[in-house]
Image (cartoon, rainbow, N blue to C red):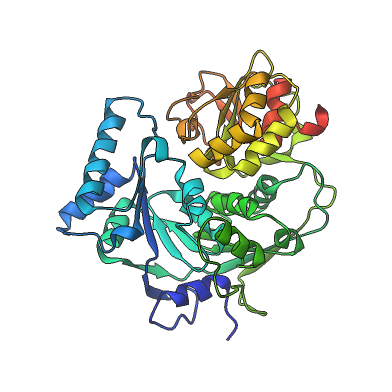
Length: 420
């Protein structure tokens, strides 16, 4: 029987025969993740279920990334509790301070997630790891506590939607545009409890960092997971990050039972933005050009990797940020930050008038380091633009790629790099 990529990965982790969508299967976990906001709740549940030890200290990851550096007493105390738990359990992968980066950029970079893995995390954007061919999904803190204790979880096998991209990629079109195009087409609930499986010649040629960007926003279409096949690009990415190359390729079978197939031809497409207040409110950048902005954010678990920094620097080089705009650049991990330093990207950003900050989620969730005031607008490379997401309920967020964000910072309005 032909199987989807989703079914194949779940089968690798279950002793039951995975035979159909909607089937409930018990699965072994490769990794369990939580952060400084969600881990305290998971730890509380872990105690309440009277668990003694985590199932495997090497397979629990705690990343203190959302409010790093801690912005107030409450956030500092949350980290204190996580740190104490990590020490008590002798957890190998605990990240805080100078070792800390945005979790969904940090884990792939550190080789902690990889092809064929099954990962659950107390963060909705855990689906990022599907860019490496892992079935990764977000869960509530109580489920995470059970996963930490047992090393297992149950899942309902999600139906899969196949998404194909073909054509010739225009110069300024990127992975962020590809995923926004899909969300704009099917809506924020168009893949509710489905798995999105990406393919086609454009995807075959897409670097892994772009695949991670697309998988990251699968949840913005309501998806349980966003999955890419394991190919030579995936294998090379693993080796570069100190993880042995998988001894397998992994892809859906011919004739796999997809619930739906969605196809795009990207030839001649221009960059897009998701306008307030939904990731599905997607329009070509030319349709909203001349909309004034007061802030630009370049970073996050969606677009804070080194390729994103290079794209932004390409646009900002020898240019100045508009005097009415705060442009905040947040490299996603210490390794990305240092690579920016080595390549001279930080100097480009600062010469342009950007604020370069630490490796933090910060403004993405309206946490700190870039909060919007009443009536302000931002162009951001983040993943959500719900009402009040980045600050005031009267503010607006436009989601975009790094090159669109950088061009908007220079012109002081929503703009694509072709308008410079």
